[in-house]
Image (cartoon, rainbow, N blue to C red; front, side):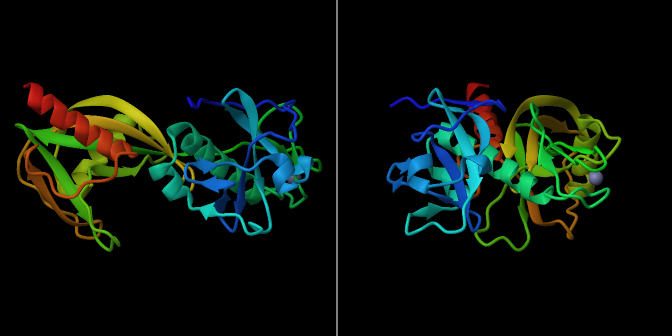
Length: 267
Ligand SMILES: [Zn+2]
């Protein structure tokens, strides 16, 4: 079965009994079946239709996000395991649902005057009926950059990881910075290297809790790595045929590394 996912917000979308719901119980996604992962319907969950947030269309039908008190004996999955194992359309829908539910919960009350907020009539926003403030979902942009030099890639290991692996560098965009400036600052701060040829690669929403990873490639202008030990445990240059343990195939970090390996093989 081909699955399709179109993120979008339609305030007029109406939930039918068989509409799929991405429901969170205690932060985990409630499933109707595990192998393959299947979403429960509005009818099966017996959720209040007023508590459903339209998030887009999954396989052509409107899909919704909700928070429920308990999983009621149904299997559940962490968002991370869905991202790693579910078909990409379901994983992307769950990632969007998680961010929107998090935003709704975090903006139940107005941060200016304290009144309870209400959903906007047409837009993906919450509105304060008392002072008129609008609250839109926020995402936190972060750059992720593959640094290479003379056929080798720079990979670093962060301290304190449960399962140690090596990855490309990443960091949050600060107010007032262009993405290219963030790339240069992060690489300089974390490994003490200057970079040239900063090029856009692609992006990935990362719902932990609301990041957008914006990928770049860049060429280091020198060899010598100076690791910032508050951020990293170690960092080294690697040839494509001697890579250490790297992130899973559902991450933009891995797509950057796979792209590097493919380019080196063609060269
Ligand atoms: Zn207010």
